Image (cartoon, rainbow, N blue to C red):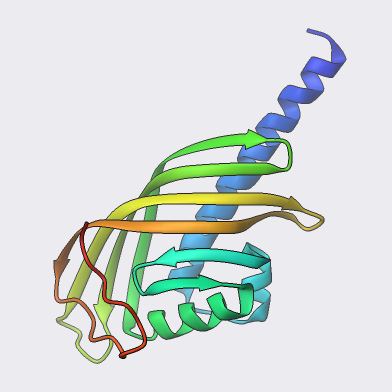
Length: 159
């Protein structure tokens, strides 16, 4: 193996490790429940788009607001991601995976809502590292009592 090939392989492995770390930290951050500007910059590009069960959103500031409102519906959560398939193409990458989310409804310690679905995430390499530029969570099934949503948020539904 020549030096150029070794450098390509090391970069591929480094990219995959950085993307895996970003995705894992992102899901964990949802459970840590600290949603501020630093959180938004750490995970998303400024022009991020997202398709979420509570509706689509465009832009980092709008996403931050939507995440805050959505997560306020729950007292506690556990988000798990798995089966990620990562494809890197230069400064762009995609991740396809599965997500299982357990939510304790706000103000109702006995109210538990579980959702499971498939995720599709696009990432961009920035000066600060990999960031999410587009994401979609498509819920496949749910169990339990869904949260009571404000009128301006779209209801969670199974496909």
